[in-house]
Length: 366
Image (cartoon, rainbow, N blue to C red):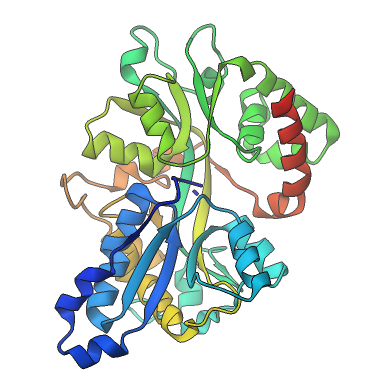
């Protein structure tokens, strides 16, 4: 999501004291630092994972927001001063972090089975468990627009995002080559199942950047996940890329007139990873086991429209905790939303991130 939010930190730990039976228990409590993307997403984790785990164990969680990537983890590991314990990571960063020795291995056999006894390795959706990571959610990057900005014809496709003549207005895009290059090719007619094959070639990369050139003067760049809904609300952009959960939150919690275009959504997973050298390995493993059981993953879907990584959680997805609306139609994996979806290729980005970041930075500077 998934990068997102200015780096603020907030402690959700204080409430735990109410659940402790005695001062002695409080003095023995572990404190772990859990790092995630902020905003509505972190709130969903706090409600579904943090608070129940703290109440159950008497431990404390210091919740910190970041913008994604491995830079801070790498700095802590190399300095021998690891202060983060569990970090919500995109899959490409888990793969890379594991390869570079920045993350602790996590044995999937320690994870709880489904309520019906299915082993975690079978219960988790294929591809969502990794040697150094345990998935929690499936999420997607989508296009969203402010309905009040288009009085006549409304944009409905990914190609419409690139059509500034028919649909005038500023465009919001994350300041990263990832997804922007995929979308540029898809909007230029490349089928989803040929996108990464095309991006492997020099010609394909040239084609993607040429398509981005066509809207470059209309782009407002964002870096934190809280920014796209704010850009829409402030009228700074008419249409933007965004994380589907952020737009959902603006729609249902803030009554914003935002519309999601599911065409061409790029979906991914987020996983818990543990920085190598954490001083709280035992406690953080217990937290990961707890937060990725069937019920906890289903509970998170009460607060945000990301799909649970466990198969056994899907039937338990119900209504939104605050508004009572049915959450299933708002999931990226709902069949009607998933027809033209593209799965982010962690293999491609693990292999090509540095080279494409460099080219993207040079393109921005032109």
